[in-house]
Length: 402
Ligand SMILES: N=CN[C@@H](CCC(=O)O)C(=O)O
Image (tube, rainbow, N blue to C red; front, side):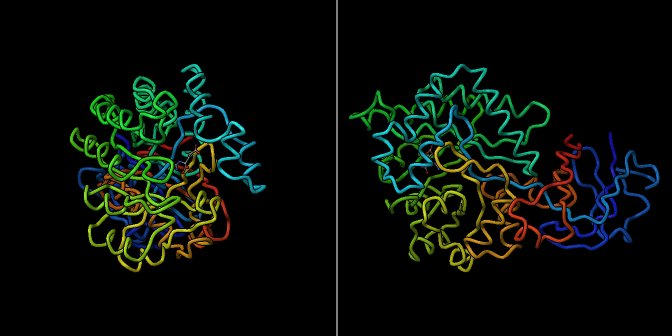
């Protein structure tokens, strides 16, 4: 049993309250008490009889403290890179020109399939570690670059195994074999959709938490997405959907119909879509890094105004965006989506916890996980200023990350 007191916190942004001159008492992996240091009780029943007897006292030097950040949308299981494709796109090349030059998602599928598991594992480990060191204590991570039954299931297991290692964030594993149609199924898209539906039970058994489908032009129709998501839901996976990244193809309505845990990206979203999200309580995951890359921004302020729960994601993937810093994502959300710092920080903490169905985190209150970040600043406004505010220290479940 370990009791840890974090004290001399200049500004504590808990997600529910803001305290100045604050302290946090941590008992094992959970928060035991938070508040103004002046109100710290002498004893906390079941935790410590006398506050002078805590095992560790850490002076945070007047810094800003927040909950550990949560990245609600990433694609980290891949090998290789597509830097040349990024350069082409920046120079105005069309998606068909990029594909003709050997780029696109299919090229990552080829490289990932040809990479040995050890090398793939090392790459994913490095990425996940970067998230944690940047202050993100929970990462949603999708499969989707093997697109074979065995490869996708190995990806699920890889993520589950990596999460157990030291220096890793918590991982929410999403099975996304329905990313694109792989080459061996060209001309047989329906067969692939049915195969993926059947693989969902294996993915759940391998440890996946969610199932996701890319419902968009050049990917899957709403009817195909329905098949896969309903299959996943029937075996206990949380359904989520890539909706409106390039075009509106009925994904928002589908998300409402299936009670999806999230509709993601949402660049092409009308007021009617927003009303559907609000009415059916479907949270939105928005990703400023890739929205800026594509030059089409989701109407986030209108979503918030209509009461839609918003979470933020990096949308880290090999083809568009290498961000592993949610503090940078917060800066971009403020600058590009016009979110207030408070709304963006909430979307990167409580919003993510809501979307991932993990009520044990995202807010610093007694009983929640002690996933905590001390930042190199004394006010949360620094997130808007810094474009990549750095953590000074991160605790995962009460344990300092070295
Ligand atoms: N967000 C998900 N997938 C990306 C593609 C990923 C890639 O290009 O590898 C997309 O939006 O297109």
